[in-house]
Length: 165
Length: 120
Image (cartoon, rainbow over all chains, first blue to last red; front, side, top):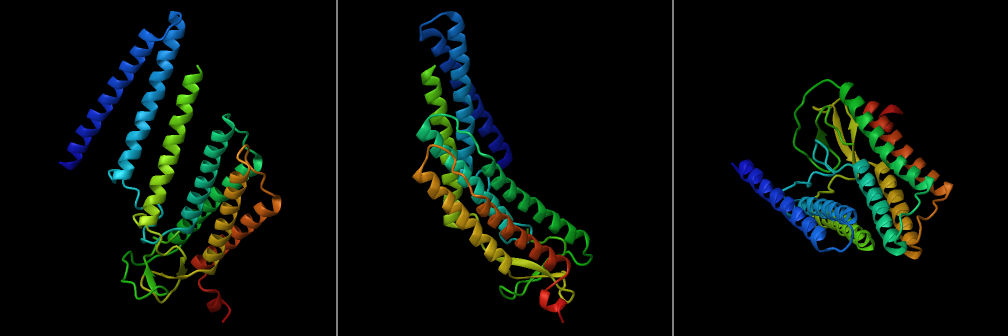
C-alpha cells in the first residue's frame, strides 16, 4: 500500500516537473527575442537543464527525507562498515568537491591530470579486489549460514560466506 | 547563451554540494553507520561460521593513509583552486602500498587465518 502511494506520489511529481519544463520552454520560445531557430535552441536547452535539475533535486530530497534509503551505503551483509567502501567514498568526495571548487574558481572545465585518475583507479581497484577476496573466501568456505551473537569487539562470530569487504 | 552556461553551472553546484552535504550529514548523525570500520574477518576453524571478527591493523593503517592523502589533497585544492593539484609519485606509491598491505592482510586472514596461528 505504501509502495502504491509512493508510486502515485512520484508519478505526480514527475508530471508536475514535465509540465513546468514545458511551460518554461514555451515561455522562453515566446518572450526571448531572436530568430525562430535561436528561440527553439534556447527553449530546448533551458527545458532540458531545468528538467535535469528537477530530477536531481527530487532524488536529493528523497535521499534527505529517507524515502531513498542510503543508511547501508557503507555496510556489508554482516552489518559492519566496510573500509574499502569508505575509502572509495572519501576519494569520490574529495575529487568531486575539488572539481566543484575548481570549476567555481576558474569557470571552465578543468583538465583532469593522469595522477588524479590513478588515485581514483587505486581506490576503485582496492574496492574491487576486496570484493574478489570476499567472494573467494565465501566460495572456499562451507558450513553454517547463521550468525551467532557478538560477544565483544574482538570475538564477533561472522557468517560463513558473508564477510566484510 | 551566457545565461544558459550560468544556469548549468549553478545547477551542477547545487546538486553536487547538496548530495555531498546529505551524505556527510547522515554520516555525522550516525544514520550511515561506521561501526566495525576497523574490524576484519579472520578465518577460524573453531567458530560456527568459519570466521571471527577482530580489530585489524591493516585497516587502521589504510584508513590513516587514506585520510592523510584526502586531507592533503583538499588543502592543496583550497590553496590553489584553479586546477587539479599534482599528486607526486611518492604519494601515489604510499597510497598504493598502503592499500596493497591492507588487501594482502585481508587475503591472508580470510584464506589462511591469523598470522600467529600460522607461525605456531
